[in-house]
Length: 360
Image (tube, rainbow, N blue to C red; front, side):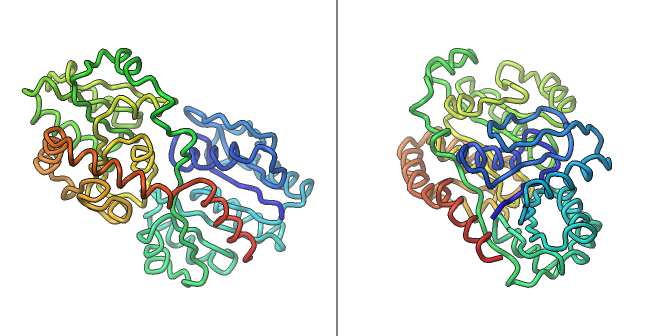
């Protein structure tokens, strides 16, 4: 059975990271193919012989359809596995008008713009042509069932994975990584990594830095880029936080980033699941997350992490101080997180994915 993965672009983000690991973990698998619909931003490089490059740079272009028509015919593709909204629209059109024999899978990664009315309307119209919808959390599963009226029999729950061979703290020289950022051994380092947009909670993260500005032993590190970057930099300057908050921008090497941290913050206003919480757990970094659906499916308060009320800067700050002052709690959260990671291993994920393909 031959599977063609479609993705909007290979821009840095959760969906692109997942696809990269799926392909690079199976370098000899000649039955999987990948085609990005356009070139955009910081492109994730994927090493696999069946990654087919695109030359399109436009969001709405017909050129990918011509490429895909050739790819499907020449390689006898059986399944289109569509990641994100635009690739799902493209897969739907290809099946309806060109290849009715194709099996169609829509993988719901849960980007915020997928809550638009247009997306829900599209799902309602496409249900009859889609064989399976993959939901990455119970929250995403509920959205498909309740908002888009997808039958439960068509929804497969498949949590994101973490590549434990990549996210391994023993592979990083922590002292050297800290020295590069001018961090002292005694600093308690708090991290945030996400797209710099309001929904990811960067304002709450900076708000905690403001409340803790007098504590010179606590440092804050930010990795990521996005449309709010100028606003973030302006706020750091206005609050005179440049010495306490280190902004790194886009980072291709996230293992070094996690390695310097003593705790990792996910202050998202909403999240379908995400990847950073399990990446941090794999790197033995305690996680503090907002108590919202999707995140609280993975993070259990005072078991494998800490939760705080959504958008509550004071509560977030209290949790940071609690972790800083309680080494026993930090150790317990790290140990439980390491045990929980077995549920999110890449080999287990691929087995479940193959089972979904086999059921079509």
